[in-house]
Amino acid sequence: MTHRHSIARPFFAASAAVFLALTAGCSKPADQGNTGAASTSLGQSVPAQQGKVASKLGDLSAFRSIAADVATIVDKGDLPAAKARIKDLEVAWDSAEAGLKPRAADDWHVLDKGIDKSLSALRADAPSQTDCKAAMAALLKTFDALHG
Image 1 (cartoon, rainbow, N blue to C red):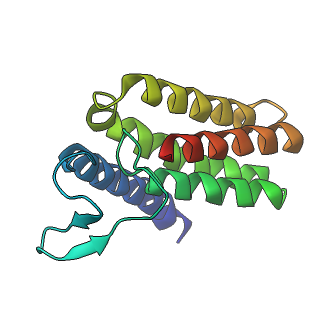
Image 2 (tube, rainbow, N blue to C red):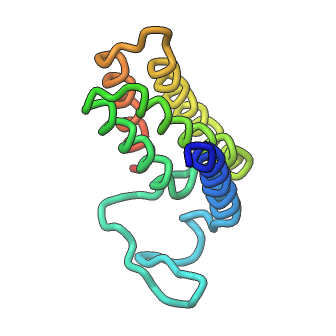
């Protein structure tokens, strides 16, 4: 049973990364067309978030969600589990690079550095919960700042 789980996790992480890369690379920039609503592929209209400006990089919510999961795990003190979960963020982020970076290279580099700092904190030889909490808080703050 553990062998099956060891194969399934990378498979699902890679599948999620491919999905994110495809959707990020194919999405329309926020400044085109609609004002006040975003169109879906089915021709339906979804209200735009009021008071929030979309990131130049596009929809970062999937990446932020993983980072928030990692921060929650760090807060609980389970650094090995947080280290395992942040690998999902690393894989998804790296897979989406080709679709995201050309949109806003400066923003991409800022976020990439924040992800790298979080990875380093969690992968340290002797990770400190304080350092990991600080790195994750800074990363979430960066996501929020780039979202507008």
